[in-house]
Amino acid sequence: MLADSGIAYALLRNGWYTENYLASAPPALEHGVFIGAAGEGKIASATRADYAAAAARVIASEGHEGKILRTGG
Image 1 (cartoon, rainbow, N blue to C red):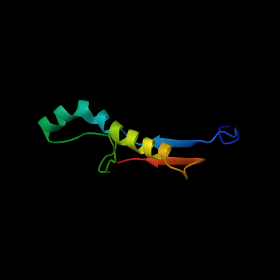
Image 2 (cartoon, rainbow, N blue to C red; image 1 turned 180 degrees about the vertical axis):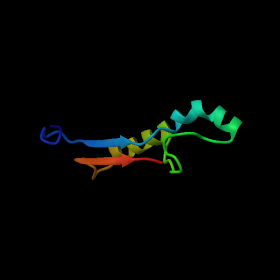
Image 3 (tube, rainbow, N blue to C red; image 1 turned 45 degrees about the vertical axis):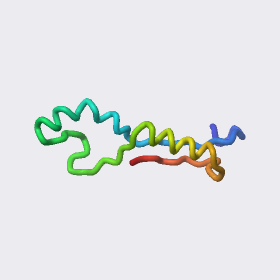
């Protein structure tokens, strides 16, 4: 629908926010293990400030029109 509207756009799909892990930090430090749904996988989070900086760069530059940009840490 947006693509057919004629309005210039760029969509940013942010990954997981680093701040979401703050509540899990104290028990992880106490027990020496971080428990999450990634199992043995890796996570690539970024802070809200990092995502905001990425959005500002997209807004201030050209060449992103009509694109979906996936961001992450």
